[in-house]
Image (cartoon, rainbow, N blue to C red):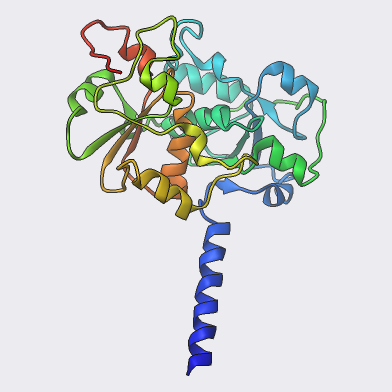
Length: 288
């Protein structure tokens, strides 16, 4: 009997480990991506700067730099209209019907930002390369300097308003027991000790969990068990409405992915105007 119990426990442990390996249906490993490189329905997107893209990128990858997606990138970083965004993506050969694989240099900021924007536009199958370029290099994945040959396609947006939150909605959510506002900036930014050009501090009632906490030093995602502990410790639980922001909400995207894809949270939204938009209105309180 004891032998059977030990065998059962071992089998259960293996199943849990297997679950961790394949956690997140939209998280793709370098090994898995290697097997999809010739799939015509897969499009790989480098979210690094154009100069980085010119130096080296994954074979066949197109380049989308998030700065090009904003109404005024030097002032606010608010995303353009769905029609404008769809035109940009379509011009890069990206449609909402394709499997879109995103990667950046390793921070997760750029790939996470593109992930949320594409989800907002209604793209169904958007993946993030686990480990980003670091993970690809570690698996000795092929790289190239040759620019991809892009054939324009039509991207038909289907805006998902449920994952977007406005300033008015954030203001109305403050203090509600069923909502948690999450500032994913550094502790210094949150506390107001590392800002120079904007009002210092954070949105009243927000909790601080820096975006870096969802990734390992190797740029891979932490396990679902680790992530759940990290979020739960800050009161960020699946039963609540979760509103994410940073300075311009670039860093919010990778946390959005961790919550929705890795942990399966259903009610997560990104405040696109972010702290830079919040503090620009004098009527909005900022605290330290």
